[in-house]
Image (cartoon, rainbow, N blue to C red):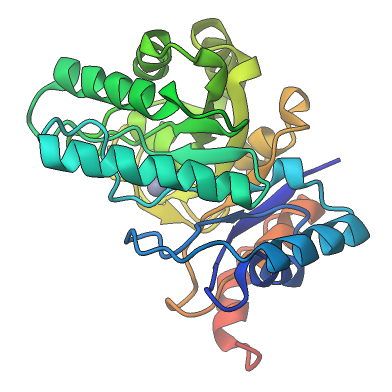
Length: 297
Ligand code: FE
Ligand code: FE
Ligand code: ZN
């Protein structure tokens, strides 16, 4: 069975229940959320009652909570060795792991980090030190999923080898996994025309057992552009057919697929329509125009 959803909002007053309801409005059977705004680290405590209600509702509608994903905020950067910033990132991530655990969730997606001019070797060393520090005393069962990155600026983790290097340096390897983002690997240079080759490479370098989440996004840019600009499904340079190959790959059946495609006109989340198109397995080149012209928007 296809497990598909999108990133959804998380509001202080509605909590996890609000996120779940947004996901259900897209006919999704999983979702990804941030425990606050993705761009900042302001966080309020998790409301236990809303978590309980959300779990009752997930059971009712047949959503497996083990497929639901949490994403850490973007401004966390473990690769930056500046001691104040490094300390801040470590402390925030420790608290974030606790929030994920309080939400009774199991997966936290993390951008490995950017070396900000200090060089790849030092950047990777910082990430490893950070992860070891964060996981040292943590006894939760939350797995940190390192996301494959586009290689924009000084971003680390744009190759499977770099991610493997990070995992290799971490003591509690069982607490680490990977989230594969189709836009990011395309922008990093991987050829999604031959996804089987890419997946075999992933398997031999990192191991398929480490893959727990797939971000399904098209890309606005050519392969290898290192830009990281997401496009709606089928409307970018990866294309519908190649994305469908990822989404329906038999080896990835049990892995949740999460859309992070752009809002239409910056205000309408197109996930219900994109999910319907994916389930129909037929690209609708007019999909975005239809949304733009629809009054319901
Ligand atoms: Fe991400
Ligand atoms: Fe992503
Ligand atoms: Zn991205």
